[in-house]
Length: 167
Image (spheres, rainbow, N blue to C red):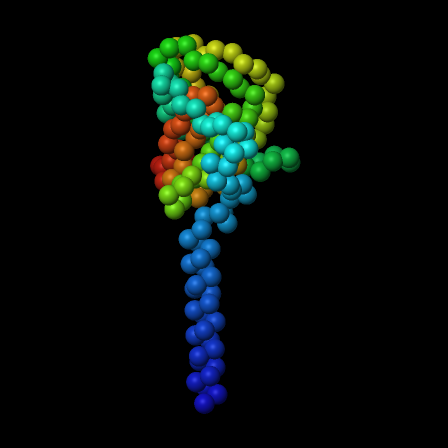
């Protein structure tokens, strides 16, 4: 009888671990240091901050790994080509981009700017401009669906580092 009870307790313990791991892996929130519903920013600002400029096309060109330093962990620059069919309004205050992750029919902000350069508003000429957007490396090591929003230009799909070759 004791053997049966021990076997049942071991089975229950193993089942509990499996259930716990399933719940944790089903919710990607546990993998990211930043996690909030992208729609919440509309409430904070009082308007839709996710403006899309019809004259802009954003395309990820690749990634550049930035090694860790004494002050920061490993990071990655997402290199994005911004193509403008016309001159584009451009405001870069260091807080103009968000990395978002898709889960259960919603987008969540999982990455913010890591540095705030002292640059104000200006105009981006028509044609192509390559910009870099720095994110902690651990964020893009999670598999899944990412997109980058650059204010006030629009969105582009970003492959996770595990979903690309050579990154």
